[in-house]
Structures are given as C-alpha cells and as structure tokens.
Length: 496
Image 1: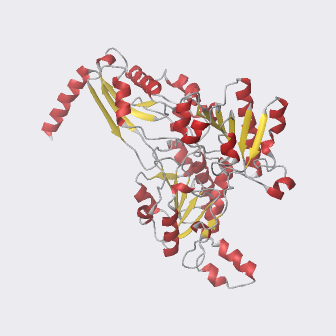
Image 2: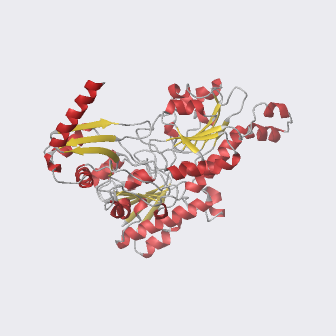
Image 3: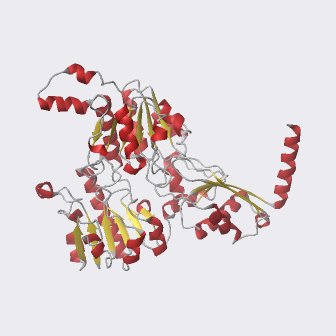
C-alpha cells in the first residue's frame, strides 16, 4: 500500500527539534510504523502544478495525509486521477483543501484529528487581540531600531478592559476565546452564530448573541473570526460589511484567510476604518511574497499582526495531531471503527456516525433533551420536537465545518420520491455562516403516527437520499390537520 504525505519543510529547525512532527523531516513520527507493516511511505513538500511530487504520486496512492499548514489541494480533477485513493487524513483540523463533494461521489473517506488545535488557536487569538490593542508590533520595531519615542506608540495603544469584543462563530474555538476574554473585564462579549449557544454555556461566559451580522459588527470594538470556511463564509468580510464596522475597530482572523476579502481588508486598514488586522491564515498558503497582507499598515504605520500559519501547530498541538494521525491510520489498517468525531466523510456519505450514541438516547424522548452531565460544556443543549437531527454534532458544535448548499429541488425530490405529498414547502433560512432549511410536509403517510415518528421518518428519507449532514427544522401534518390549519388561519386573518 502506498501512503503519500504532503508536509511542510522544517529545514534546520526540524533537525534540531524532533518534536516538530508535522514537518517533512520528522514525518509525523509514523514512518517506522508504516514500514514495519510493509507499506510504502512517500513524503514531500512539493505540491504545486501537474509535475509536482504530489500530483505524480496521488495517481496510485491509497492513503493521502496532508496538513492545513501546507495543504495539498485535492480537487475534483485530481480525484479522477487518484484511482486507488481510499482515505484522506488531515493531520490537524480543517479539511477545506479537499473537494468533499467529490470525495462523497468517489466514496473516499475523509478524516481529521478533531480538537487537536482548539486550545492552541484560542490562545493565539487572545495574543493577537492584545498585540493589536496594545500596539505591540510598532513598539517592538522601535526598540529594535534603537529609537525611543513613547508618544508615537502610546497614541494608538488601548486597554482591553471596557471594550466590546465579539466572535463570529462560537464553536469549539470561538467559545474558548470567550472563556479566555472574560477575565479581562470587557464591557460586553458578543457572538454571531446561526445557532444560539445553550443558555448555561452563554451564561458561563456572559455572552450575548446578535443575530444580524451587520448589527453585530457595528457594536464591536474588536472582532475575531472563528468560523469554518465554506460557501456561506467565503468572502464574508468584504468591503460592504467592513463599512458597517466601528471606525477604528480591530479584526483578528485565525480561521481561514478566504473568509476575508484580502484587498478589502488592506484598503480598510490603510484608510483607518480598521485600526488593526492580525492572524495567521492566508487565502493561498504559502502566501506569495508580494501578498498585500504582508506589508499593509494603518495610517499611523502599524496595525499589522500577520504571521505564517502556525497557531494550530505548536509543539503541543503537533504531538496531538501526530498521535491522532497514527490512530486513524491504525484503525484504517486494522478495520477498527474510527473515532466518530474525526470522521468528515464516512464510506460514501457525509458522516452521521458521530451522532449515533447521542441519538439513541434522544429518540425515546419527545423533548430530545440532553442532560448537562452527558456532554462537556459548551455542548449542553436541548432540542424541541419541531427539530429533526440529521446530524446532531452540527448542533452540538454550533458550527458545521462542512455545510454546503442543497438545491431546494433536491430536497423536494428526495421527499416526493418516497411518500405521497399533499403539500410541501421548503424555506431557505440560510444565514451568513450556514445553510438551514425549514421543511413543511403534509402527507397521509403520517396518519396514526406521533410527531416524533413523523420527524424520524422524514429524517430517514433525507439521510438516505441526500449525502449531506445538516440540521433542519420541520413541521409534519396529515391532510385533515392541514385542512383544520387552513380554516384556523382564515379565521385569524378575518379577525385581524
């Protein structure tokens, strides 16, 4: 079996520091394991272009390992050439470098080391916020030059206390950012997310949800992006949205570079609409030497906290994702079930396996309730009977990192192909950070079935017909109930 790994070159540093496991030189520490089992292990950092090591060897590799820090971009075209590929492993978190729909179509598994970077990235976010607000970079550069003009630095330095700070995304990383900000005594902590935090989790960090993105950014002195990259978030922060920011706000992005329009951000920083921008993610990685984010400044000559992508690859994080990669490989080779939380795409479908254990306890309860001791915070939540759970982990983690839009026609066809439908409505409830559909079905197939049974029936249809994980809301009525609802609605309209 051929295992292909695309990793970044660590140079002399990797030779001097063997704990740099995610590098070309140290190979995630898995060579001995693979070769002891008779497998071929090829490693390179050469990934660009049709003549690259990556594209040459992907054609007959069974396993691909890559990282978010130096990703091998696996497009639909490359999937067509990768005739023997069976599994893709991301050594880290974030598999947006892989065409996931193509992986589903080819029945190729995609896994990543879930949770390996969350603490590392959350700490990096906090560092970025502080270095921007305290105007640290220009101060350090002044010291290096041998200068000493305190007023030039202090005129653009502020306290974190008393500021309004918001996160776009309050999932695994975003929530930890809120936790770490609380001791700084901010004026208020806000979050923007298509799904609300459980009440107890929000209370624990004293965070308030703002449902409108423009309203959210207009209230914040500091904004941090902790959302996944998908079609709903690509280019989310653009010229139009930046115009709604508070003048002189700070923006931190350690999520994915493509969430921000690079030219719009540079222009906003140059004009002073943004006082500072920091992060470690770029729209293309490695970033070109002439990338505008490398040298952009605010009108006072500072405000740039950009670094190469390393927030999630500290030595501690590398130990976690190297161990996780080995575990995924071992499970694959021995036929052992993978850890559910690591599965992005199972065998030919978007994974719902991570929800099965929770689902078993939910389907016997009409309230879909999860008690606080079942899951660690912030994933304590309850669901009402009006929601079906095509993939519970979507709701529990707040963000579904791999949401893709589903054409309404596909949803309608999936339902109509299985049951006779009297009335069907599908309403797109998409927000800036995700797609969500309300489904209203009237069918005589629901006669004699409880509300819970109806929802499970529709849920089963969608899981079989649509290879995508999603959280839907739905309403299900029999034709008799539908007629009664029509009468009730008419009476209400007449009364008003």
